[in-house]
Amino acid sequence: MSNKLLFKLSSKEINSSQLCVHLLNVETTTECFMKALTNNYSTVENLCIIADGQKLLTLINETVQIIHSSIYSIRDVIPVWKNNKIVALLLATTTNVVVIMHPKDDILIFETIYLKTEIQAICAGFSQSLDDMLWIVYLYESELYYAKKQLLVDDIHQIKIQDKSFVCLHTYDSKMILGLTQDKQLVEISINTIERNLSIENDTFINLHSNMLQTATVMMEKIYKGTQELQVLNETLTTETDKLKRINLYAHKDKVLFCPKITINYIANRLFLSANFHDVFPKNSWAVLNVKFKHQNLFCMKKVVNQETIIDIYIPENLAINFSQIAVDLITFKDEGHPWCLIRNYVISDYIEKQKKKRSNCDFINSKIAKLESLIREGNIDMKKLSEIKKSVRKEFNDI
Image 1: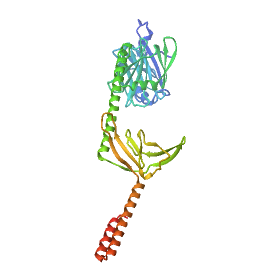
Image 2: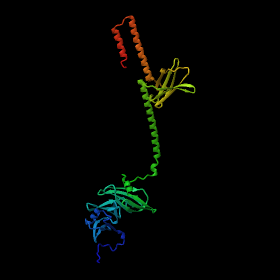
Image 3: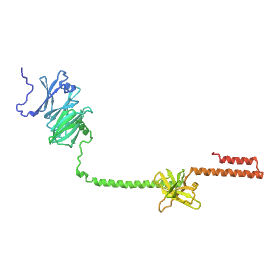
Image 4: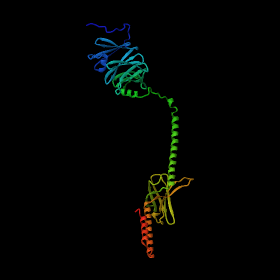
């Protein structure tokens, strides 16, 4: 067996941490990444990535090849996973610079990324939902940072996470990162949490301090006071609008055709007449129920507060009730120091109107009969007068 010199290491080198080695094979690495690393040699199943200072090399079948030379010293090679496969490698340097090595059309692409701080520990992966979107979690002086970057795009989005103090990070799988806190607790950080935090548009979180809230109480009191004043003004406007509508109703002298439900009740050996009105009167007006007798006029007023209004009036036992003598008036506006707006007979009973119409028709017919009898007695009747009487009767009853 013969020994071969692959590449030289300085005899003065005593810090072995400057030499980083990472093994790749076809089982854990995507096909396109392996093709880019091996120049499309499909027979290669294993290879070794070596970082020596500023140089990045590949070892394939005892052949060493430099694939990248950096101006920064490479201190670590981190695999980047997606769907449980390595799709790229992240080169961490001794500064705030990292280099992402990924395939593009079977060619290796090296992109330089500038982070906010130097790097104590770092993990990376690709988004499960967005194509070519790289997320990075890194640590510096126990402070945690998230970053995301679209491949082949210069912009990078970074945020600082106000969370526990970490001392170490390590990729567990393509969906989970493990972090070790200063109090030696192992914390799981899911990729979903990282991507959800990175979806926030602001580049940084704003830290709230107690002095920011010193004037909050004063501001809330002013807002509350302004809200109360606005509510009072709104109530006043509603009241005045309602008042104007009722005054306008009086001005038009509008009336309604309605037959209220009237009942007679005996309460404590006393007789009461009760009238029920539903959705007849406007709110905040006053309904007046009148009952007329030969020598007396009884009435009762009640303010309208909702859709149903019931008015009860006491009837002395010695008085006989005539339902045709019941009238309902409406006071649309009643205010101290101002004249009242009264609409007499606001509610017109359709039954009473029919009875009045019937009596009127009877009186008309009786008058025509009397006129005809008078003409017969006088012997002063002819076809012309009979035709005039007939026409007047037809005209009177043309709506029947």
